Amino acid sequence: MKVLEQSIGGFKVNRATAFFNEIILNSGQYAIFYLLFELSDESLVNFFTAGHVTLLLALVLQTMLLVGYGQNIFPRFFISLVAPFVYSFTNIVLKDKVPSEFFLESTHFCFWAYSIVVSTLQCISLYLTAKHSLVKWLDVLVVMINVSIFSFLYFLFEAHDTAHELYKSGKVGKETLDHAYSIFSIPENIPLFFFFSTHWYIFLAGVFLAVSIAYSRYHLLTLKNMLQYLSDRLVGEAIVNTLMQNPALLKGHKQDVTVLFSDIRSFTTLSEKLSTEKVFSLLNRYFSVWERVVEQHGGVIDKFIGDAVMVVFGIPQKTDDHAQKAVDCAQAMIRALEELNASLIVEGYDPLSIGIGIHTGEVLAGSIGGERRFEYTVIGDSVNIASRIESLTKDFATPILISETTHQHLTASSDFQRFDEVKLKGKDQQVTIYGIPTAPKVRFSDFHKANGR
Image 1 (tube, rainbow, N blue to C red):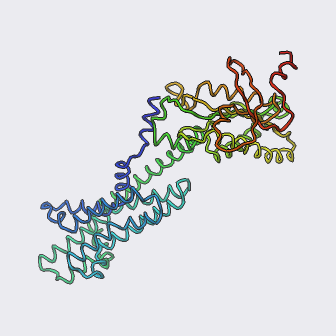
Image 2 (image 1 turned 60 degrees about the vertical axis):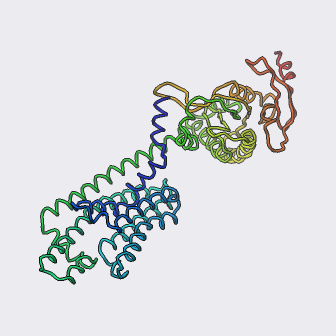
Image 3 (image 1 turned 135 degrees about the vertical axis):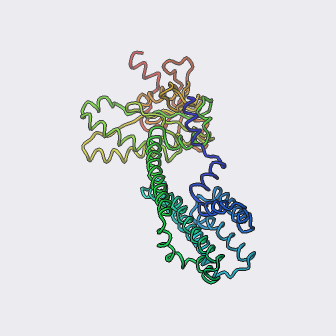
């Protein structure tokens, strides 16, 4: 229990974590590397200029906006350009530069180009959704760009420093110095840059770092997708998402819910006529229909028990209309079963007939099990009552029976009528049940008399 809380707690992302993830993994790397290079100046004078301080503040603002609004495509794209826009505007105004010339400066031009490319890739990733196979590769590509930008910045600063030294020594003029800072000098400086073996080492180190991190990132994303896939199917996507946001729900806590039990009638007889493989295939098709209907009505499939299904409404998040949702779900399932039976009859199978029992009451919800194996489920007398009510559906010749408690919690008018007051197996107190009369009703007391009980 404690291990599970710690594991899920580790995935919980608060705003502080989201801020650092955003600024380190998704945006601002060019600006960060640029500012770090300025720190290499021993006097730190360059770093504390108005332009660089503005860039730092703009980067923080941009990251905060992305944390709040960066989950949508268009806001993300434009917010990702806040830092370069503020930096450009500030430099043009403070330094009284000609906009066209300033935009052609290599570091400034690449700042814009990098921001546009990375934000575009991230917007494409958002558009494809996290489940698309290309998303993983787009994420890897962004990581490689983020790391490789270090080598590119090193190249730019080396070229600029070399040109500045030549200018100070009088070997080149102001025009040549200005040209060295423009994007047109990049092709000319590449051969000179790789003339020195040290630059090769720096460049190759950057490439190796980019490939290494991208490779690790790819495998981490693969593992994450696999774990997400397994957890969604073993536990349920709704429960996983809710528990990741609120791990405290793993602890046992009392909650009013509506429990639904369903069972295939005469399934033992049916399975004797079919091979194991056909029974397996038939159950999977049947459970898939349940899965779709339950998801549409906001329920959670707690477990499959042989041919039975246990569904809970009102967990892990509390809702006021869980009883109504459970009843609506049961009626929708009966309709869906008619469609499934039509297909089964064409394929030569006997049609399926089910019984559904529903009860509303208090349960204990939380993680139950040992240290190595556990599940999120509900326990309590309400679960047993729902199961017992389901077993009575064949006795009353109706597919759905609900308890009086569930009937009292319904928020919409229904066709359910009072059937009988019954004593459930293992229970001393009698329970009033309601159903929809689709066939001649058999009173519980008459059923027992007919069977000599």
